[in-house]
Image (cartoon, rainbow, N blue to C red; front, side, top):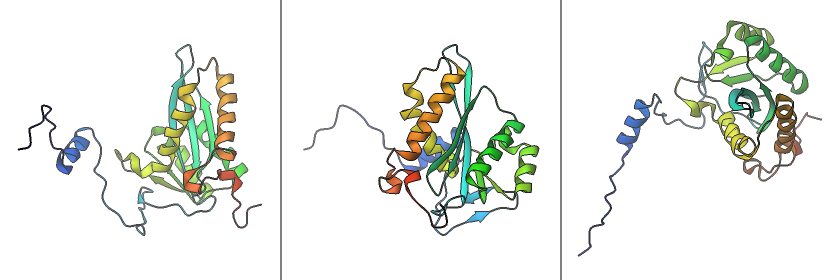
Length: 212
């Protein structure tokens, strides 16, 4: 006869996992086909997959860290989902709607204007001035559903890489140091670091049709 284990491991099924997700304020993801593309009139997205070309879908999000004196740093990360490339990572002590608009305007001048811009529902992204400016620029905004971070998975994945490969290994003395080191890391990410999603190549080593 098979002896019982001294350690009791409770069974975990999908219902228990779904209950834990709901208790933590998250939503259980629904199954979707690869062809499913839904953008509502309000600008929220259930699913829209990026095409492998520049400026189809960008996404942006904030990350937090701090300098040695304990003061907060907020990085605004802007990511081209189709190219798997970091458009910009900009550190500031705090962000207001006008600063977000300026960061996007600078990125549009350097990289072109994206068709869609995906984000969560943070106040800096849903500010009326930001939405109005993007609409005038011709960009369709897409806001993920609250409690559904996987709908913004590309920039969330980039944030995780940035945390593991950069922020966790640095001690920042001041904002100038933050800015210099961040620019250096983004350059490495885009030009040198191999990406599995790009078959081991770096984003800026790939030439797309119509892009010099």
